[in-house]
Image 1 (cartoon, rainbow, N blue to C red):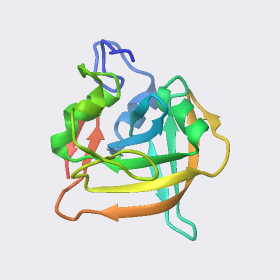
Image 2 (cartoon, helix red, strand yellow):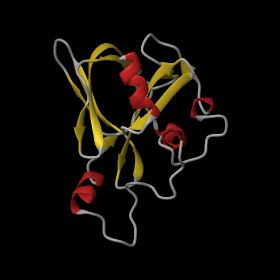
Image 3 (spheres, helix red, strand yellow):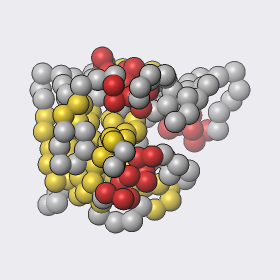
Length: 170
């Protein structure tokens, strides 16, 4: 895992491409997508996420094709999506490779084991999904589409959003 020296959506002295600036102004959910591998759990902070209600419901997300998570989802066909709260900002940065995580990011929080992957304990909500179709290229990412098998909500915790390089408590 690489720790980047800059945040991908942070303001800088150089002008960003207009589409990137537009994307940075869209409030985005802060989620961790995670699954199990023979070597242990892998996860990634994913903010480009949409959930489509229906029978069956679906979840889609843009995932870095170079990430360990992408390879693991292809191998297992299953993953869990945890919503994050405002107190989980450091974990989000660590899972994204933006902050150090001695011993790995899964040591920074408590996790529950599920059939789909590790779920953040105390998450405002989570879902378990299985791969519906092969991922397709979408810009520099891969569009991962899955069927939602299970979902839970915890009304006692509010989720956090990300906009213009900052976490915003909802």
